[in-house]
Structures are given as C-alpha cells and as structure tokens.
Image (cartoon, rainbow, N blue to C red; front, side, top):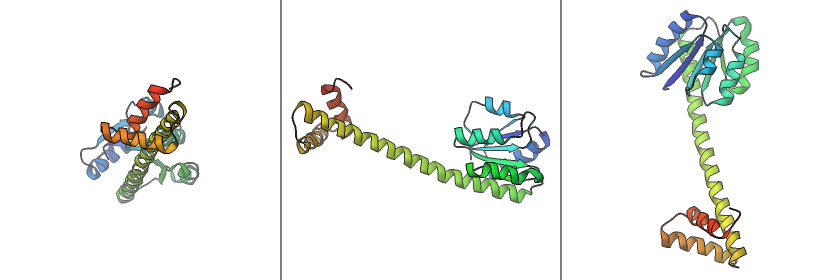
Length: 190
C-alpha cells in the first residue's frame, strides 16, 4: 500500500487513522481532506480511500461509489452504527467495505488488510485482462494482414500465414509488426 486518502470532516478520526496506516504500511503517503468536494479535486491515484461518514458536504456514499467506479482504489467507509446496514446494502456490491463506529484497532487493521489483499488480486486480474486484450488485438491485426495478402496478392490463407511467419523470422520482427507493415503497404483504408 503506497498511497492512502483519508476523507474525514472530523480531524480526530483522521489523526487516529494516520498512525495506524503508517504502522501497517511504513513509507505510505497519507493524504487527508475534509470534504467530498476536496477529495474529488485530488489529482492522483490512491491505493486505499478511507471515508469517515458523514462528510461536511454529503453522507459519503456517492463519493465511495465514484471512487470504486473510476479507479482501482480499495475503499473503506466508516459510519455510525445506525447507518451501517443501509450503507453496506448500498455499497457492498461495488466492493466498498463498511465498518460501523466505534471500531477497534484490530478490526480496522483486519479490514485494511482484507481490502489490500482484494485489491492486489483485482490488480492481477486487471493486468491479465489487459494482456489478453493486447493479444487479441495482435491476432486481429495478423488476421487482417492475411486478408489483405489474400485480396491483393491472391495468396491462399496458408500462403498468407506462411508469408507473415517467414517475414517475422527473416526480419527478426514480431508477427504483429509484420502484419502492421503489410496492412500499411497494401490496405489504403488503414
């Protein structure tokens, strides 16, 4: 955990949470702001956002929803006991953990560790997803190049495939790069 945002209108809560984060994750950058408006103005990506509800300008649920929809940050909402079930019903499907006050240090630490573990798993899945999208894009480009070779040079599919593979080996370039060159050379729509 490298960067943490604490959004709390109550300075005492922020002062209590900051040392807990620093003890758990030494070297973390902890930023504190007092309102949802200030949090929305932050121009950096956070690993964890802790919202102490209610805030000066809103209850905090809307801010939590925005954070999890627009970023990969883990989100922890601390709220009054009488609001906890309602907040949890609203936010748990989005992956926001809701804790009711008063909370113990042990419960807070366990929750933050759980959020961190879930975030790491999510980030791994996100990277794998990006890799698969990239590979799919490469396959599409290679197939497009085969079609171009079939159309303009009257190659069979096997000939087009062999041509791209041979060029890749001979020129020591990836099949994707060869496919790009083919498409740029022959396909005027590219």
